[in-house]
Length: 183
View 1 (cartoon, rainbow, N blue to C red):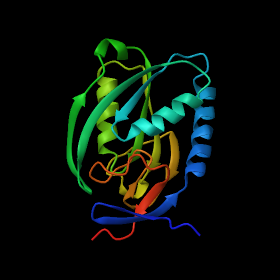
View 2 (cartoon, rainbow, N blue to C red):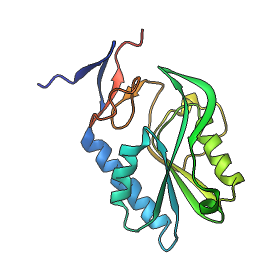
View 3 (spheres, one colour):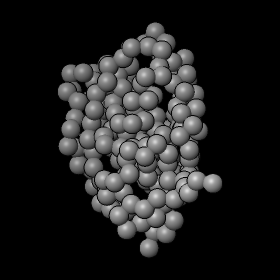
């Protein structure tokens, strides 16, 4: 039996969602998006840094060509959200106007960050905005939020891997791990 625990900095994590399960769900999401956006010309907006691995695999699984842009929005320090949005990288406004936008995110916890991103895109003239998130924590939402495309809804766990990090460590892991002891 292979040990499915890892150490990152001062924390221990154990396997939560294996790579194959993640890959299968991403293909299902890609099929949904391919059906829903057939004949349309959406723009994908990848939320950095955590969303890059998920976005890469999802985009390669689509059956249509599209534009891809990256934004960087920070609100986390360590294990907790600061509650403030800081837009560090944005899309040129002229690319947004009148377009269907699909935002790709690694995880949605409180929903405040993605709500701010969605509102910013709408304010800047997007025709529509939909959200695709690998993980959501619905019990943690602090706003009214509809996420149309969800990989996995999870409880309030701290997770790393597959783009998700703990103080910038663990993003490269193929599986998703949950923290064993948060203290």
